[in-house]
Image (cartoon, rainbow, N blue to C red):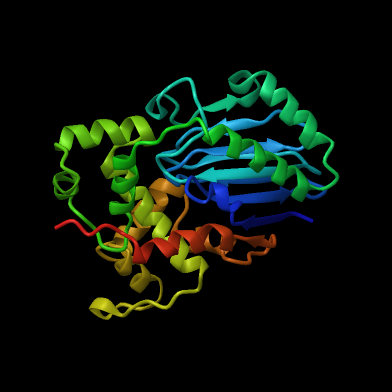
Length: 276
């Protein structure tokens, strides 16, 4: 049976990793729809070749073979393991970790292949990432910018740049290099992620502007109305909101558990910068 379960990363990675997961396919191949999240991901099939998926600006489809177990890591926007290029050069690309990390990746593949359970394999991968990030520096202003672009209180990009003591062009350049997309595109991506997080968590709309249900959740994350949400959902996922949520709810028909992803995302509501 197909299964997909997300969980929180180890505490040492909480500042750079949004969620980790284990995915198993059943007796038939599974069509996976990868979505823009603002961050990069590591996909590590047990016994296979690990890959890093660069930032996405639209849905990317992948057929995962039957009887495959994959452990994965989804990074926060603006954070990534050591890479040979800026993220704006890696949008939508898949990079082999064996080529990126060479001998350390070979040892990692061997260690994970010999792990007795997927849970242990995921723990080994996280232990490796903890060591990688000891020597990786991050742009603190980009981290602040990402927090400011979260959807809980929509902000003007120029106002955000001013709040961070940057020009709009400086903010654009630094976010583009560190995240892989412009601040505006990242803001749109995070807005949809915010809607998705609320929907998966079973949140109740605040009732602003008299809207409830799906339309209310859309308004709560900054969409003008449900039609605006529908256009963005189609652009980012290739599906309408109802088509998408029908197979991507908190506990969908394939036994997918997305709580490890939406819980940390929703936690940013109390920490977002509020530039004026």
